[in-house]
Image (cartoon, rainbow, N blue to C red):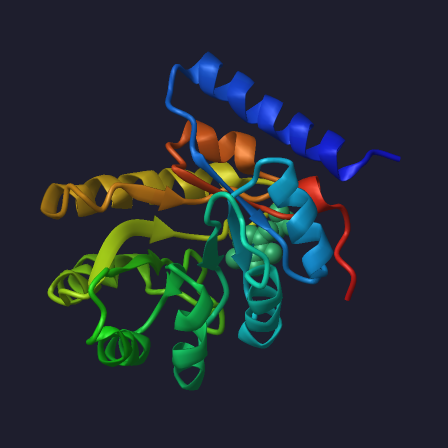
Length: 227
Ligand SMILES: *Cc1c(COP(=O)(O)O)cnc(C)c1O
């Protein structure tokens, strides 16, 4: 059985090889630590990881607090990658410095309110829903540009770019291509919003080919999650 260190090294190597082949810059690797104990986050930190992704507030906040109880030579960055209820925004902002799942007007309003006193803007990605399924989180592609206008008007939010989860595991290229096109359009209006948070364990190689700037990788590095 492979160790965490081996899986991390292998994933990092694949990313580097792909980026070299594609002659592109390396993306930010976010290791998704959901459903794993804080000891795994500690281990990853020791292995040099500084970017962690979590999707549930009630799990992430205690983990963050425990992790932050020790002084560290370098700070870590915590990314919220899962759907955020408006009544959890206050807690989310206690640990997350990047929110990848800004997916609706009500959440934008709550984030606006809760960040009003901040000196550093909160980094946000607009989550795009690439499916017809309205139950899945995300702004529909046709509404993204209009929504982005509202986000960029909030001085305490910094629009980083777009985020999506591919709708089909076996054919992510189509979705990633749509995202790359949408991102290009968005950057026409907002050049700074060049982030593209696409790519997970099963499809990060394809995501790199379509310009992913942030990969959210869980199981390929952490092993299977404990539910
Ligand atoms: C869990 C999760 C990931 C990581 O998934 P893996 O397949 O384990 O790499 C990425 N993004 C989101 C939104 C997730 O919820």
